[in-house]
Image (cartoon, rainbow, N blue to C red; front, side):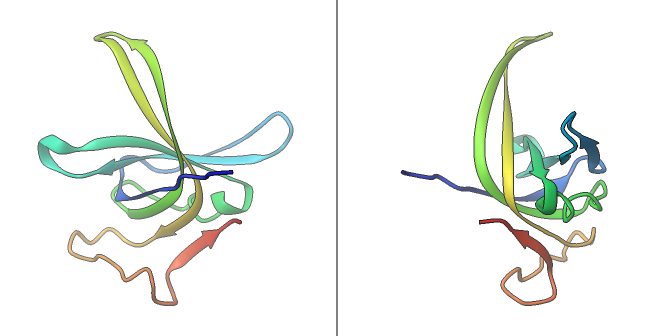
Length: 116
């Protein structure tokens, strides 16, 4: 079986939102802006259960590293056909808001979670 992984590094566009499914599972979502200026691409990042614990404290502007499987969903919007990019994250790493503060995620001490 082949598994493709997508990795994103960007800024949270809003505070993370925590919800519970009808079966009691936790899901945490936030929007993530990747790129900058005219080339910004927005993603919806979702993390389930234990991985979501590392996403739920994210605030607007925080730098987020997320890795997982990417899906594209088409829908009809006010301006015609649109595409939503959604990442089901299995790895989350976060840091603060400083614009020039890009962490070395390979070093210990970063807040992270990986689910195999």
